[in-house]
View: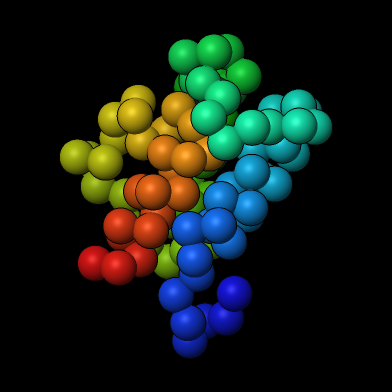
Length: 87
């Protein structure tokens, strides 16, 4: 992933998965696991995820983006970042 090219959804998911693994201590995070609603991550970790996404992918997470659907799985986070990068 370079600064000049847009990352693919798969590349975004891999970066997000690695961050969530470090944050949660769970070694085998699946893309569809319910991260927040399933208790893998708490509310403080959710705030850390927002910060990580904004800094890593150089996007702004808006108030409208702060829905459980966007942050409750690796797949949801990758889709949010993909939309934001394309905007």
